[in-house]
Every structure is written in C-alpha cells, then in structure tokens.
Length: 155
Image (cartoon, rainbow, N blue to C red; front, top):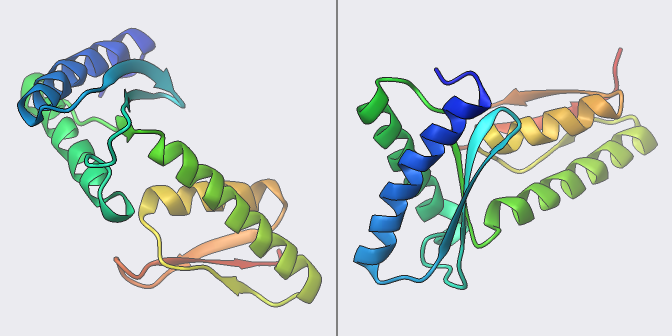
C-alpha cells in the first residue's frame, strides 16, 4: 500500500501512462494531471468529451477499476486512487454535499430521519462526513446497489 506522497505520485504516473495510451487508442483528446488528494493518488483527465464518463459515471467507474488493476499488476499493491474525467467527480461531490445539507436541514427541522437515494460507497462516505460535521448521525442500510444513507438526530 502506498503511504507517502512520493509513492502516490509514482502510482499516479503509472496510471497516467496507461490512460495516455488509452486516449490515443480511442482517439480522444485530453490532458492528464496527476496529484495527491486526501491521501490518494488523483488522476484528472481534462477533456471536453463525456465518453469516458458514461451514464451516471459508469464508464468512469470502470476506468478507475482498470487503473487500480494496472497498479496492482505492476506493483503488487492495492490502490485507492481516484480517476476523474471532465470534472465529473468534482461536480458529483458538490451535488452530494448539497443533498447532505438538505437532509441535515430536514432532520433538524422535523426530527424525523431522512433516507437518501442509493449511492456507491465513495458517495456515501462523502455524505456521512458531511452529516458528522453537522453533529448528526448517519448509517448505511440495504444491499448494493440499493445501499443508501439514513440521516437522523444524535441520541
């Protein structure tokens, strides 16, 4: 497991090379940026094309898993790297924070728990962090792909 910024940047460089080849094969234009964010390698592909995002980020999620497999194959280490294309994850993060704030306000106003739409684990973590910062509690319920966050007042 990569544990310092230099290791994470090296992991990102490995993936950036892989993605550069993929863009060439697919004949897509895009600039690739490698950085470290929140203790993870973060690869951003700056492009006008949404082809690598897909419906609800499905292609992007697959691309991220392939990128993690590249790291595993080359280094033998599991990776938590994140891949973003055309700012999709950044926009989605802002949407999730807004959803969390709405749920927090609803719970604070009514005292009733709020159930959010199903989300993947990464998206749920963003919501859980926002809820905790507001002093409320949240938990995940259900089975994937229908796992969702439930927000409620702290006891």
